[in-house]
Image: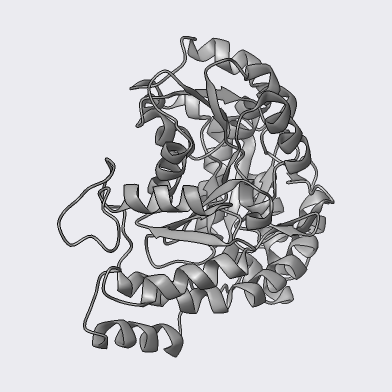
Length: 388
């Protein structure tokens, strides 16, 4: 560790932008058409994003939650069906299914990677299961080998919640090369952003075409007579956002390379602090974009964990409490919840229960700083844990 533990590090701002975004916005402005049906920015972004992730088909949408909802709808999720989701995730993972009338079934996660436990997912499969949704937590892939086998054996499709996994690779394969639908988010804090936005990758043309109809009120792109072929909604991304995302995509790889270089430094220093356990890495993750720098303090308790987060923020670290287990939120129970009590779900999700109360994450911009600044982080964490 280096530096004064009371001295706040200097981190890059986020979002980052340059003249590339300005040029793109002007280009979108001056083309004279500001929505995707008349302009060229969304079409170009979709091609570029698909190519970057090894997919033949991408559809840009309004946000990451809509990306999940649309993808699930394409898979036939609706009333009478169930979707298996990790209990430890952002609430959109479950609510996307619940808003379609399906039941979200939370299952436990691995205590080291924080990703869905394939054995827990397998145990939750029923005749009503329409999809299994691994969430690539903090950019670390879930065990896609085990999940692919489960999907094939159970005859249940996977949908990757890749909101944290832009540019990630698993066993030499990119997100779009794994054979399943994947949904991304471009919300303000994500690895590339236009403030809001989302995208869905599809492994085949048929599902992409179905999604296009549903994201545009059921209307095909060539329609001039309001012939709406399916039900749907307006999930179309605008041209200005797409122009910004094209610029964001071009600097993604360089940023990932920097974060990949910084995380081992930070993880090693955090692991040297008594009681601190950084998120573990499955070696099949060839390239992790590190949306979050996550670590646990097992046994700390939620109340003290929250006080530690506040103290870290006061010391200049962009720190956050981990997601609350989805079954511990009122919104989860409003609609589409399983017929179980909170405590019954908690009993079969002990890892999710623990992680949601003892984990802390740092914004990915911390890993874009130089080594000296990153080297100060662990000193601050150690000081705060000793004094809070």
